[in-house]
Length: 386
Ligand SMILES: *Cc1c(COP(=O)(O)O)cnc(C)c1O
Image (cartoon, rainbow, N blue to C red; front, side, top):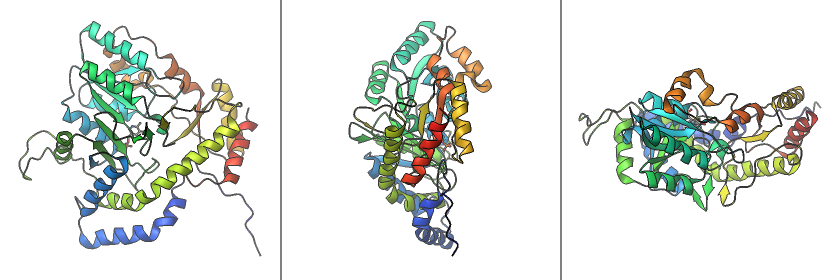
């Protein structure tokens, strides 16, 4: 007998464990599409949209080609462009800032709160006032990001947007399944953008995304914009749109995965609880958020400084435990955005928390299929580096 006693390898993410649970169903659904040939706008797309809206508790879901395109279509529907200021956190994935720039608008980078990693409301209010004072740009939209799956403060963001007549867009790319005061994301803001990139909380086997909204007029615009701005009939072009549809094959994969999501969210929360219980007191762990349920897209700890983080990463690597830095650089320091940052606000206040987090943050393995033995190994590897 050759019993395999080597420990189960630990992945930062794990898509294989999940696939083994649903492989037969995936094969069946994919084969049905290969037989039907309905690769574009097949029935799986509409079925998925209905189930996404039901899961989120919102009125409409519109499938699109990626999370980035979800953000772009949502902003195109508001005619956001030249002369418009779009407020967004400096500490997020690049796509959040890229979209306003592609549309000719100007991203205004806002600092984040160290506790929770999301947009800092006092700094948001201050920068909106500064944009108005400088008088060159119109404050048009706030993109709140639910970073690592933790919901931003949506009641406050909505109130700020309502008072200023601004569009509130939820970049929920890392957070599908998260909830605030008993209402899932998709019910907050004027619209929410989802990404189905493979490693997100609900991921497909390629690129995909969706826009969620309670607003029927917006949902209709999104459907038009994702299909070249088509009107009531296919060859009537009512507005400038894009090719931003969700593939039928990706919708089919998502229909196989969606029934697992409720349990997977519980397992992600189990992993987060384990890390919290065993790492609190050694490193800074994500704090409790009253009224909020994180989707735990990632689990990120804070070390005192970059050197301490380097030691922990090295200790983890030596023990075969992966880690990652999301994100090593705040967006206002990226070469592509430096010019926009200088133009957005002539007198831009510094962004100290975003800068500090980039030096200190570290993400641990986070997926629903981590067992207790694996979690113990992660914790032992982290503490070995302290
Ligand atoms: C992943 C991600 C996106 C972009 O999603 P894609 O599907 O990769 O285009 C946008 N914003 C945030 C915060 C993300 O994490």
